[in-house]
Amino acid sequence: MKRSLKLVIIVFLQVIFLFSMIGFKNFTMYTGTPVLLKTSPVDPWDIFRGEYVSLSYEISRLESSKIKDNIAKKGSAGSKLAYVVLEKKEKYWDAVSISQSKPVLSNGQVYIKGRVMYYDGKAYNLTYGIESYYVPEGEGVKLERQASLDILVRVDRFGNSVIERLVK
Image 1: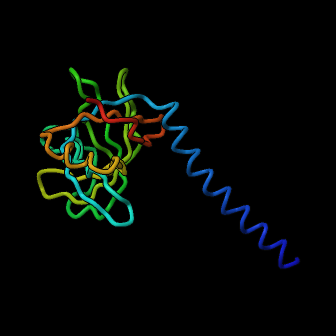
Image 2: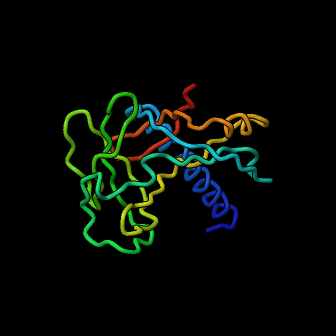
């Protein structure tokens, strides 16, 4: 194979990879169920990423005494994949259960994929990949001063999540 043909194939594969990443997020955005979550903001700043708000959701720390717990092995979780079933209460969606396998859903429920970072004996601490929200310069300080924020997240049928917008 010619050297220039190999280079064209490599560049083409990289472009396809980048567009597929964008496509997966757009799929979640357009087909996902809107889920309103309550969060607490922190205002970090990064020289490479600019200004963003780090979000800590109420569903990021799940007390095992308050939810149905289907995780077989407790202790140090070490970033295990977990499925958290969410159910709409009054205004917000709350966690109902956590498991290591895809759950069977009742009517009005969705599940979101997350990673159990650790289990401290009382609660699971999770991340969902939606913990950063990028804001225009100067907006982060205003958001940090608020005690809580409402974030509209889209969750697709595969448990993937994307932040749609901040709800004011």
